[in-house]
Image 1 (cartoon, rainbow, N blue to C red):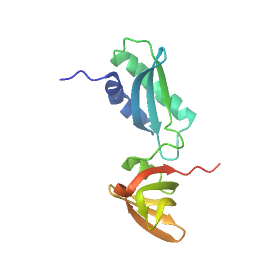
Image 2: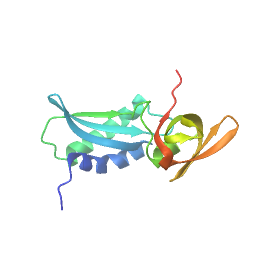
Image 3: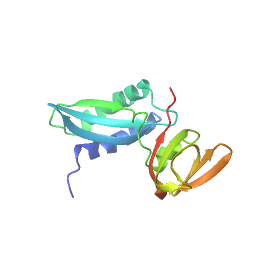
Image 4: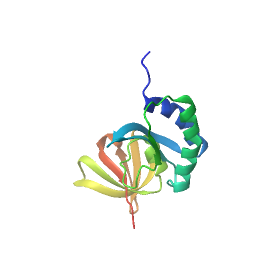
Length: 153
């Protein structure tokens, strides 16, 4: 059996820890930036991530990593949100943002439109249901090149 990478071993430990904190672990990366090694965990949850969520996951997972994952290099542990403008890709991403306004870009124009801003009403494995004005539309995920939240400041 192949030796799992640091990121894979950390993911196994961190997923249940993040879930206990009410968060979902989206990504784990172990990478070198300049002269520093970074162990980066990206978490999210419905309603968004707050600094306290990052602190709680970091405090809970840090001792487990120290105890159970052999990492020969000194590293910095970073726990962060995915960012406001992160593309939505997975079913969990879309479920998390039901009721939010999204900007959808299409591979090919739909009814003469390449981009659409609409409120996400529902989502399943193959189709998004969105609302524009008083009309609902069903859009196949296969038609969507990019989807992201619309952020109003």
